[in-house]
Image 1 (cartoon, rainbow, N blue to C red):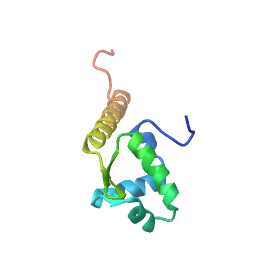
Image 2 (image 1 turned 60 degrees about the vertical axis):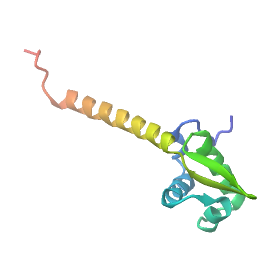
Image 3 (image 1 turned 180 degrees about the vertical axis):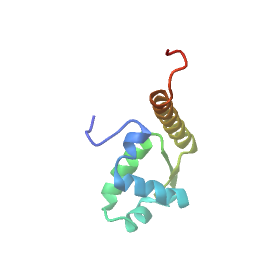
Length: 106
């Protein structure tokens, strides 16, 4: 496995360029060339980042003529949101356990 690829949404969003791509795709679907025009990286680099995002389930592609148009994958984003909610709930629960006195302690 490539050291720069990630299988999960959180890992995929660990890169600044991939976060920028996701923000652009949140506005509307884009082709690779359109994305590259708005980013300080090459078209091949954008394609590699899109592959990571696609492998993580955050992006879908659709061939339209000779272009591939990319859009956010709603199901993948919901799964990521669920991961973040679970992480946040556990963190808050752990914090509460540390700050609240236990009822069963003398």
